Image (cartoon, rainbow, N blue to C red; front, side, top):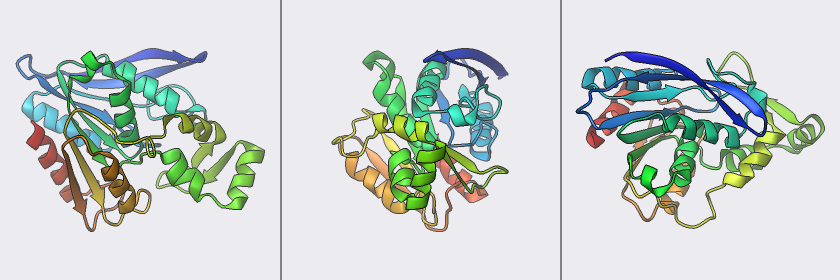
Length: 257
């Protein structure tokens, strides 16, 4: 089936950005599709996203992936990005999908996957067949960023409006005060049980330094109303992009198919 490239404009609070989307068309008789939500500073051309596309080609599945504003091929500046913006973009792209969806969210995309599930109206939410979370960075802006900053970083954040942190990419992470403040509106921990109304599978690397195993276990304690499976890959890192990691992700997806 063909792979379509499209883009469209999303606007929030007068902030206009063009969102790049890649969607592989699936067979009409195939009702299950894959929807990818990438991580912070990642893009839709990463190894996990490409594996999903290969899977879609093999099984004639619709596969939808996109870049958040300020990421990859989409418009906007990374420093202007917020959870509000990226969630709105996820909702807009999800509206362009067809059939039942398996949502796969990696790192920050895991947080956005649960927020998307929560934000959709009940009729649309019924199209979510399952949610797969890879090293889910739930409440990232608080638990994995703000709460771990040093006094010097907090002072710099207040004075400059952002701080820089090392990353695995060519450029450092730029974490803005706007992103952190906006993230407070979307915190899930401490709000009681999370109800997704669909099966959830969590994949977690035991050597993950960005989203530690304890963070995923904390999420497990909140997902008490749905069927949840947890797979720990003892020697896996945060990206879970090795061949054996991708094979495990493929196995989980095929289980839902």
